Image 1: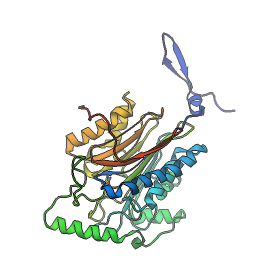
Image 2: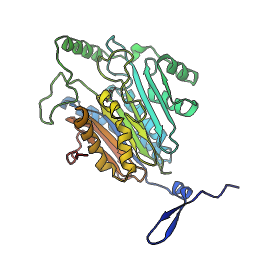
Image 3: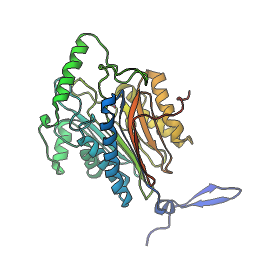
Image 4: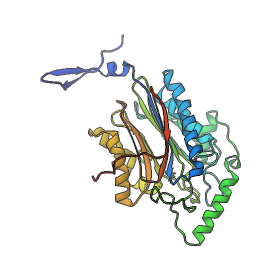
Length: 347
Ligand code: ASP
């Protein structure tokens, strides 16, 4: 016989009402899927590819959510589509390290159980989010790096590939240009700039991808996957795959995925910062612009955020000229490359 559910007495209107967590978990929810494809100064000729990419990811994830699949399954599927799409800095088509290789980082986290799986600096895995999911499901550990991560993935059925399969000529050219700029002493301005400034070729792409979802059983989850930053030193790991930095999920607070220059995001543990504020009663819609405002005020950082609470409230914000985003609810899909929201508030 199933043991009686633990109950918690909560103050109601003038009397105590009984809270039954099993009842909450068995109530059917209306699912929701939110994805992003990086925040930066996306040039006009790439807007369509970005919108199409986030749309395709929404379709794949929503197909699963609609059938009652878990939030984890949906975000893994959505992020896999984005990793396979060469428009984004994740999977094939990612930025190259200083020595011309692709090194990938990814994290997936389940808000219902706080289980997490991360991989970093992997070079021979086509879809690092799949490897991250395997870590979450099959390992007592949370995080694997480099060859250890590849070995773990292979032991669990992932085919290892040659790193060159992930490298595009477009990226070789981009790397050569970035290295020439660095030699000439020009800074990387990828995340800066005003919305109506002309596209500056020095602002190269930063298209880390991510997804957060709510499933019909009320569980939320988050995933982030990246090729990191252009011309990064081999072995550099950014915020994207670090728990609480570029990705976090807890049903008690929120599911969060970030994009932007990784070092400032890591220093502020910004994903957890944002989730904590939702737990303390603020809405994701308010917290998203606050988090990006804090990133900028505290460390001059630029980037974007998507976040979602277990009650279905969500928020998006960025302080880069653009961010590719997509939202799917029961009302259908919506995609775009700019979020128009109120100015970030002071904290
Ligand atoms: N956050 C990523 C990193 O620093 C880059 C990005 O979001 O585009 O690795």
